[in-house]
Length: 497
Image 1 (tube, rainbow, N blue to C red):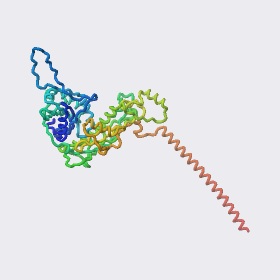
Image 2: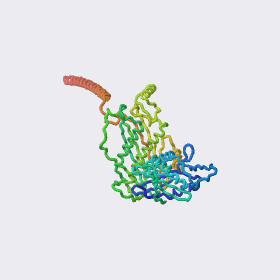
Image 3: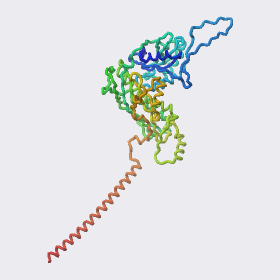
Image 4: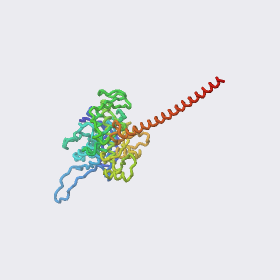
């Protein structure tokens, strides 16, 4: 449970000035920060306003109460000075939280939401606010399952004050769902410690036969593989700056710390034979992970944040592929020469079109080699030397990246492209392979025939060379014999004369 919350003074003051200068009576947005279980404290790095929805309407508005003063001869009942309430587009705020969470690296999360409203409008909308916070928590879950609360900050403009509350998200909404907690402003971002890890992975997943009950699409198979790998990654040991992490000491040195993860040997791996599998899905690549740690947190927390960031990054890329499935093209490779009409007939027989998005392909039904490249992770400078991230498709440019940063994070787009980091040279990719492409090859009939023909060819060449060599030897012997006889006759004739 969070007992106290510290907000980054610089950013919160800027947000307060921005809200004060605006003419809007109400605004809703997200809290980007961190909840620390080891410190029982929450940290707020920035306030991110939720943009207008697709129709251009604001995500939050004030609802004035309906007054019935049409009764004649009766004195209207006295009403409170302000009985207005808030109307919030809960689904839109949740969608904003989902997309913002993709852009955060390790040690940064969407930890709740804020509301800029009058005191009476806030009090009259507790149920609506709790429902919105629960939607945010569901759209942007935290890694630690024991966190059953999020933060709700109320910025009141009459009178001007900041209040923070814990909102329980694991139970039904009651009068006790909102509980006050201590809140203050201070310096948070400048003291964060930085950690980086370049993680290489190679995951091989079996593709079972079509008659199996375990039919999976490309995306479902990758999602399952990422989930399983995440469990293995949790037990990995870590080395920071070349030193093995063995305890919960604090990190006392400054600068960028390099993290290396050491995966354990997998003992209980289920073996798959050719009878069970139709092929292999090979998912491999590199992930550049970043994490930020409060100096009072143990160094083991940085390792946990790095591991979480790796898995979250892979899942986010897969979510982007799924969201843009209609625009995705699947690369197919065919072996040998096949007429187009025959290929179309085969695709029709399989019920698969060449235009089928990757997320809809059933691997057991797709008889061709299929490959899919995930988006690259790009790091964008954010606040006080920290970075956020985004993912670029091969056809996207930095201009698309800048537009998303401005829209979703309400930040200034970087003017110098050189400040945008591209640590991942090759994006992670997945490709389907036949069983024998990855298994230990055994001599096949065709190989035996080719080897036999090769041996026969070698024998023929050897026999031909031997025959030629023997003929040369016979000719040489005959010539030597004739030469010897001739020399003998000459010597006899000379001696007689």
